[in-house]
Image (cartoon, rainbow, N blue to C red):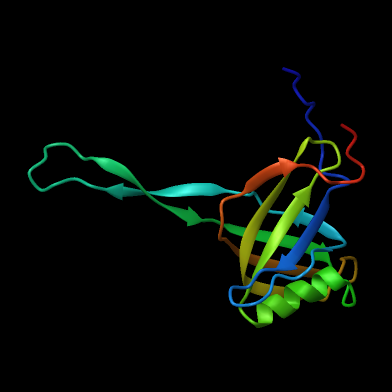
Length: 152
């Protein structure tokens, strides 16, 4: 089995589409100017299941709990992907995010329920930024990469 080399994230395409419950899923659009995207985390809560009669503590796995994620991008007010994130945030909705690295065999797709939207207007020597954060609200799906730069 061949091992893929360690790589950096340059060239990664990030797309989003509106999948808010109760609406017709939209078309995926690229979010341009993404600078950073948080970890795609999966966690199960740990539950203390110790009965009163026990002399040792017992823990069991709980339900899967979606982890928070932040996506930071250089602010482009007319970018369709960034406009979609703002629109979905305003209606307290959910987007399906797909992360497509240019040099990996898999891309990752998951739902992100948006919880926050921030605009940092910049400083004298700093860029204007848009940041959205949310809670991962589905299991990540690992599938064949459709990034046009990926060369199998």
